[in-house]
Image (cartoon, rainbow, N blue to C red; front, side):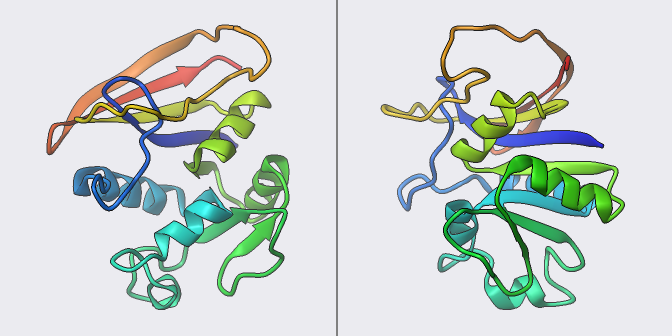
Length: 178
């Protein structure tokens, strides 16, 4: 199974954090929805899933709605603190998430958030491709995506695509040699 990590970064390379003062760009959200639809699934952490359901975002009803943006998708939440969320599958680890999606017949797994989940997949060498949407903002204190949390290692990547999404968001797509 091909695993694709999808993230938004700031122009200075931090993992972009959404706040009421700095909400995600609509172009990036639309791109995420398109990738999720193409994959038929997405994997998130519990906190990101809860943020998705914040006012003005995707409601539990929309997740279950046959006409909603995520209708018919396998949504996998990785959490050690909760065991059941209606309409989604809860697992304990990145490998368990991938095993579940593989068992369901998916060819691609979309890993979509947050930073801890991304770093966990990267640290375990479970990512084949990354899609970075670079937002037109500089962030003071931010989180980083790490391939090895204990060392200063490097991982070569190959640029597959670079394109503007609109709203001054630029998308970079890289293959990671596993």
